[in-house]
Image (cartoon, rainbow, N blue to C red):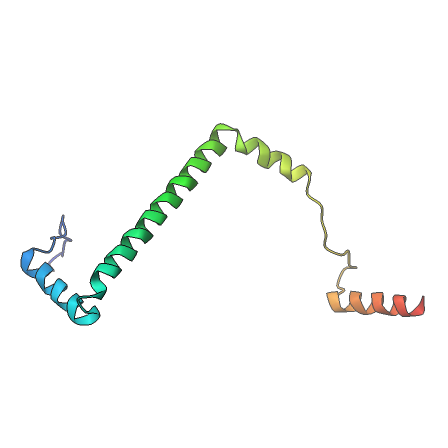
Length: 105
């Protein structure tokens, strides 16, 4: 039984392959649309790069300021906002009891 191995490198397309890709792109989008597509792709990549750098900067600032200490302190400030129900009681039963109590008052 022969063992198949993956290639150590992925071949990059050469000139003929790139020309074929360019020809297909011209057929699909038209010669007038290709510069617009390239421009919008470049702008999108630039915005993505700026956003990535901003997030990296914020993460680094959080690490330097001791973000872990802030997380530990936030647990102390937790307030439970869920209504207290008796064991086995569903939320609709609790709502019905509350409505009934309100009507009787």
